[in-house]
Length: 424
Image (tube, rainbow, N blue to C red; front, top):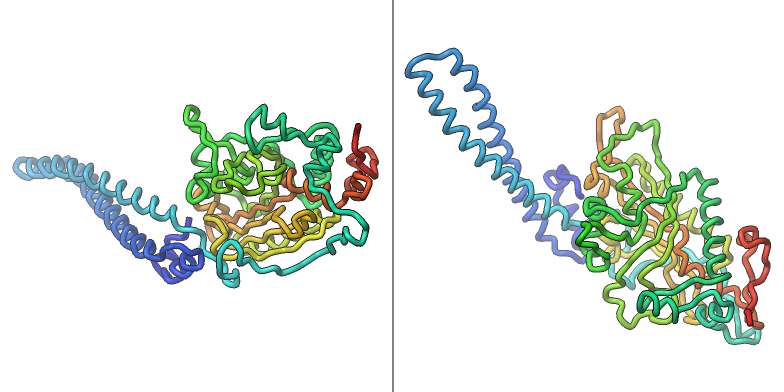
């Protein structure tokens, strides 16, 4: 949620941010009106309530006609205070609902544009020349089926389209990636977490996933709970309603969890294999820090993601995501796109977002510093989205004989295996 002080002191900043996101800036004018109405309603209620409390003392000291008049005024105020309380509550609700529709303030320097207008800021590694090696690369599903690592047919039989089963070496490969990711995160100072994949509406709304992203979320109405699309939700809500001391900051967490997404609007896209699925497992980094440190932490999270991808020897690019593709909570976002040989292009495999104080305001996560109690900043970063990283490993490290070379960093977590071979 945006800072109400900013709305009152510099609303043009919010207007510019809305325009950068491709959203209607007129909501800012509605917000200003709603904020004024809310503040006046609260002031009127507090004034009437103060008068009501003051009359109690006067009545005790009065007699006769004066006392009767005061009692009549007390009765009148009782009704008035109740009405003003309801008006203040309604005005507060109206302001809050409007404020929830406004995205985080886009950081200066973020590229303008939509989904396809992110700016490549770095290219790391060189894609293999399979033609020079004398063979045509196979896609991840053909490789995975030959390895008996991926079973789409039975995944569909069990759960429907866009589901899969990782079997044998496929399951082992996920566990190896998990252990590599967790071991690296530990050296970077992150506390391992395994949070719930089912959360309350307050957690989902607080992280900004019930606005423009609501259609992509699985909801269980009987239980009034949501299945998370990322453990970011649980890690953000972990400290909801808390005040953290500066001495304990930053708080660094890394979580492993299943993730569920409807993939709304993706009909016909990436229907083959496990690139775009309804369920996958993921290792996610999350940081609670002082607002002044947020941009530095964003660069650190990107650095950790790059180190992990480089360890797996996958060529990739880093994109500064365009303002119109940020999502509600992010003020800036970097994506890493890995090279996919069979598509001859880079595809998204990780992302990291600086959410500044936006989520913390919605979840009431604050810090107690020398200047009092104020909202913290939150940041998130995907370290390993399992299905997409498995795709990248299989396709980029395939050999002409159908085997897959295991990256050096992953070998200790696969019993020292240097090569994965097709099975009869």
